[in-house]
Image 1 (spheres, one colour):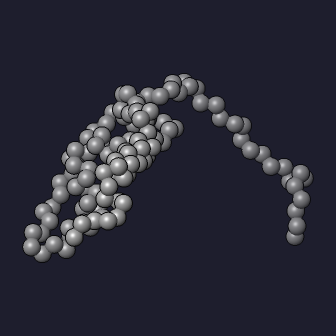
Image 2 (image 1 turned 180 degrees about the vertical axis):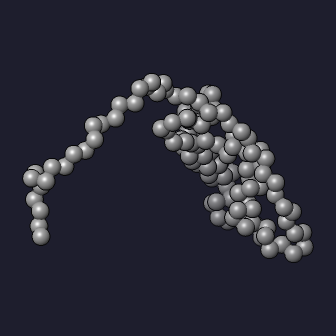
Image 3 (image 1 turned 30 degrees about the vertical axis):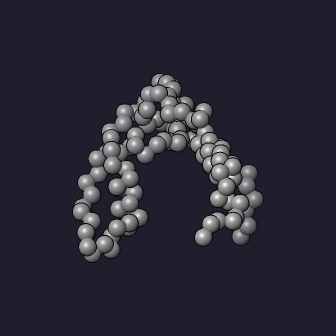
Length: 117
């Protein structure tokens, strides 16, 4: 039986593939780059976006294990996963001051606060 629907037309197929390509380009930002050098900051900053392959050599296997994928397979049971973690260096982002400035001790005088009995 031949197809009579327009979705099986070659032009419609090319339009659909072009739409898929544009959606993929929109979802994956080309300007997003991995900072160089790669590492963790010493003080004060959290981690931004970092791809999983920088943190571990077998990140996909670890993620699948944590999500329980293939955990109930009785034909080919899942083998234990040994994480192969990458040791990233600490990067000093800014210089900390040599002297720490501490405030004076807090003194609360009794005659300056409202007191309810």
